[in-house]
Image 1 (tube, rainbow, N blue to C red):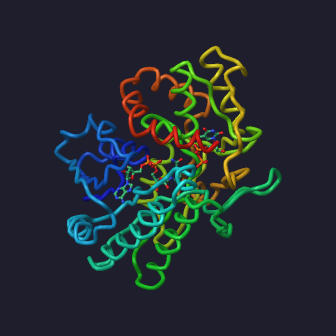
Image 2 (tube, rainbow, N blue to C red):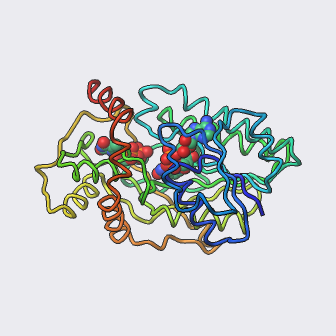
Image 3 (cartoon, protein in one colour):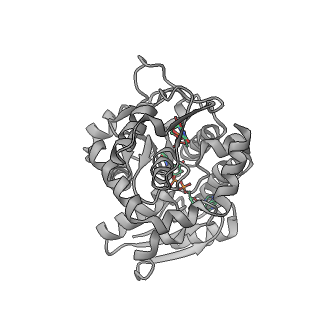
Length: 335
Ligand code: NAD
Ligand code: TYD
């Protein structure tokens, strides 16, 4: 089996490639990644010499390149995306281009190469925002995206499903909750706060800090994706969650505690525009049909993640300088 992975130099994709090569030693992977600010080949240093792994730098919007690579592959797994909500608020152009136009380009390449198997990685954010007492999102929840990021992901999901219904493209989709773990770009809540504390800085909490996310370890997510590739039913969507709903304040206190720090390190800042209040996932479909459920306990996974960032300071310090800081300067000027 030969897999074309897109966006494999990012957080989840690089962890997927490492996981997949270990668990399927006779399969091959082509990793197509544009290496945007979020793509980093250092995430894959340990696999770059593996004969079953090949990296290609390129854009999923480039039909000729994508089509050539799709021809070589048996399956396509689309991780490539612009992924940070705050960036989508500053400028949604790349989100529309990569997440919508890029997905369409991949779908057309899959369609014109004998309808290749296509798995699309999506997010629970397409379902919108829950109130505290609402039932969690499931595969039956209507789409109601509220940020430019989630709107672009929702559009890509609709396109993927439309290629199944219209052209018989053999697709599956997974909608997963907030991931955490090693190699996550330090702009997202957990790595941002851990690395700030390692630098002796405060952590900026939006609004009242009581927005809720469901957190899943990246390895649990990737095990679910692998299972869907092996046993998922064509045309179906699967929701994946971590069974760990937490307020941002709870997460912050947990991390502060790992550093022996208290509330004095929290800086409450102006809320994010359009900030979704709560995400939660009912993953009973994939549990019942494919026997998947999350295995990493949140407290263990978060402790390990704090350790990983403590032990890999070179990795994130390079990222936190340069372009990344320019971006955050702009962000802070706006606040
Ligand atoms: P990331 O931002 O860490 O990585 C995205 C990768 O895509 C980068 O390597 C980047 O270089 C690449 N990329 C961007 N535009 C590209 C283009 N036009 N062509 C080729 N490559 C391109 O993102 P992530 O957190 O690893 O997320 C991966 C996928 O999982 C995304 O589709 C995201 O929507 C989805 N997802 C993420 C989470 C989460 O909590 N991080 C949760 C659910 C779903
Ligand atoms: P984030 O990691 O950006 O993921 P998403 O918005 O896609 O769920 O943010 C997670 C939560 O943490 C979200 O409610 C916003 C909040 N947050 C802060 O309070 N401060 C920050 O600096 C960041 C990056 C996020």
